[in-house]
Image (cartoon, rainbow, N blue to C red):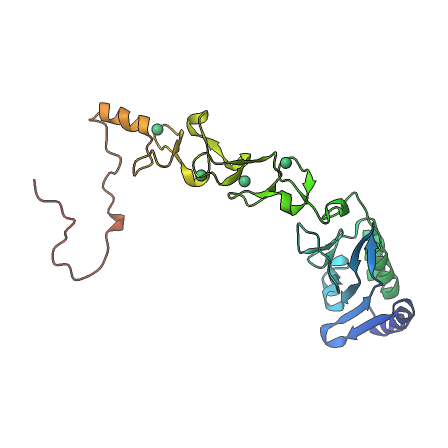
Length: 257
Ligand SMILES: [Zn+2]
Ligand SMILES: [Zn+2]
Ligand SMILES: [Zn+2]
Ligand SMILES: [Zn+2]
């Protein structure tokens, strides 16, 4: 791309946009759009920034940032400042090919007009966050969208769930989603990750308060007591032996039989 041609195009930009900024040190050409309002939701003006140095690698929307100047992000994600903008990068959708050819052919003014029109258009087929959910959050299970205040946060996965989908641990009574709970013994109480253990012997879920120090469940412990000649669980593991100096005698040494 020829810098001279770009500069000529920039003059045209000034007639299309009220504010044009050129920062050679950052290889940046930018414009400020009119405030964007989609389906009654004000998203504020955006600054479209083209970084010429990024064009060395690729001729696509990766060279462009769309920065919300008066952001009104989606409630569910701060990074989504527009249904088609996440972390300042634009999902160009149907405009992808025209944007790429404008970039490749150095038609800077066309490029900014294309991006500007993407920002002023809502494509309900592929938003990062749907405008319907802009100020609401979808339940992580059934997808029902409601106000954040009416959702419950699962203490396990930290996702939000509606009041019909949230559940709770039957020991600690904290809120958990169904996916984060497992049933004791396969059909007993619903237990959270902190309140349950996987017995290493029978692989069943057991309440953490019922297991011994090795995580072995009660029924396996009872079975073990009935079969005293069974091999011991903790077969000598000296990996915890501390290399500290100063102990003349090793107190861990068992007395000679
Ligand atoms: Zn739900
Ligand atoms: Zn969960
Ligand atoms: Zn619990
Ligand atoms: Zn067991």
